[in-house]
Image (cartoon, rainbow, N blue to C red; front, side):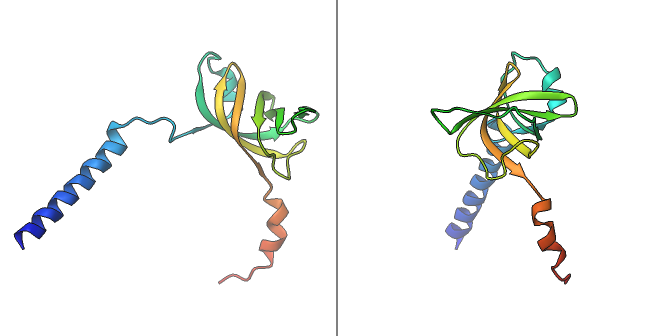
Length: 136
């Protein structure tokens, strides 16, 4: 019986130590991405390379798709009067078009976001379906 309690205390202590290590000691910046506004990034030092997440609208007539490789696209995302260029390589969402609301995540350097994630937002597309749901 004493061995069981000793083993349980040892396992519990290891779990506590591992949790403390992961939350306080290990500084892994790849696990967290800070959400920025475009205004914050425009005013930031351009030589600083960080992982960012930005939301905004696609600037009209700024989408440039590579003719040879359809997966390669660049465009400008804007909020108010501020805009940033975004480069993305991958499959684009169905709702990707001018003035679509997007969220991009990737690395920011020299006023360019090299996106690894690209999502479009369109809550109004599904609003009609949600209005017909009965409240519980």
